[in-house]
Length: 619
Image (cartoon, rainbow, N blue to C red; front, side):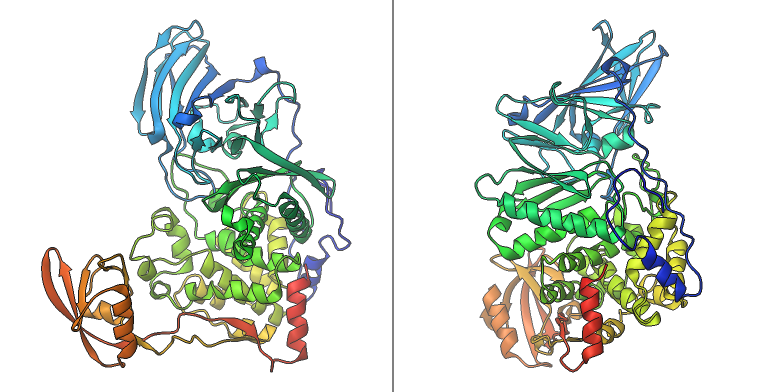
């Protein structure tokens, strides 16, 4: 095992766990560690950087960003500039160029140059005879998320794909970003390399991938540096002053960092930055050397919301390995102007979702009981929703570009979450591997073996499945055919039996049920499940519910009438649709199970208890 120059986590076993798994499977995976991230070259002098972005944030109160992008030119007649349409980690074409309000161009002498839009995200610049050009444009920034720009009087969240126009053909070249901040703002933070402490808010990216992959925070920032295995890390907060507990969050983030780095056995970066925006939004997006997160301020005083945030931290940091460096093969090189399809997001996101809470248990930040409760919340997405009988996990991954981020009232019937079902499949897969090897190998070993073998070139779906079978010492093809490629309900039995768990009752299962979901006053139908009595009766989303039987409809009345009915009773729904009042007769059914609460089975025995303890503590 070779040191990658980034600071190895101190482990006595190194990659021994994979070797141990191989010993019981009849042959080890080839232990070829991926090449380390290349060491950073010395920063080029400012005059040697081919592309420079001057980002003026003094217009932040109007939610506008003014950018001047200056690039060298070879004097040819035309120069093309383009903007990405999506950002890695968020699989949706977001059309960032739609937020560009004004655009113009000048030559090195300051004279105006013609610039013409030639497609939705590309501009042609008439630059004959020019050795340098500057494109000036303004970006409207009012989308508060981790995938888009959000600028306001008190701070800025800048996402590379939504901010920077790129000179065509310069994707491999370095660029410099210089920020101009309002006087009241105190700082900026990003994983880009700073020009120098004494040169203001200036940063350098070695190429386009690094420029796009490094979000920027600017405003009144609070920063807490820390080290793990001698590698510098930083937790940066914007918002939440006087409310957020920086001491607690720093201790917990440090612990998460230690445990996840320990899981993988190495640290692949020079430094890492957690960017945390405290406000009224939630979300996170992974990057090579940083993550951008948003957390609702309620997490400052609500333990459940705070644990959700810790799960987000764990999830995004785990992605530093699984997704940012260990990628599905179709994503090894980013095509920023078009979709890139893969059936492996259940590995990239689903298995990360399995580990995010599990590693919180191993870090001592949630209890085993809390972990089981949180895992229980994912089970309906693998069993209980009508969509699980329509869409496979592989198809959900492939369709992420057109479905996952575009949920509507029919999502419960049509779409599967590769996050949540992927987590449940990962849980059962972990148990299956442990049983097959007598607990000498696990999904942990599959992930570390995948890192060792595929972190450079990426893995195909077939390669990942073959590796899982290799570590398990048995052919897992039927497992993947049923639960990844197929729509067979996931059988929880292997996981329940192995770890001595039981599924508790759903107290509402079997009760009288119409399956009607309404909102508003007067109530309107907001969702119709495919397996609900109202679906068979022909109720439509958007129908206004006027009465149920002889009672005028309110949300409370609907609940009370159905609760007092018996399965098989016929009820009349009076609705208005398209301005016409009509009656929809519906037969009361029985509510299907919609909750699978996990708990320890007191009858499981000592061996299962020991396996469960190992699962929650081993690495």
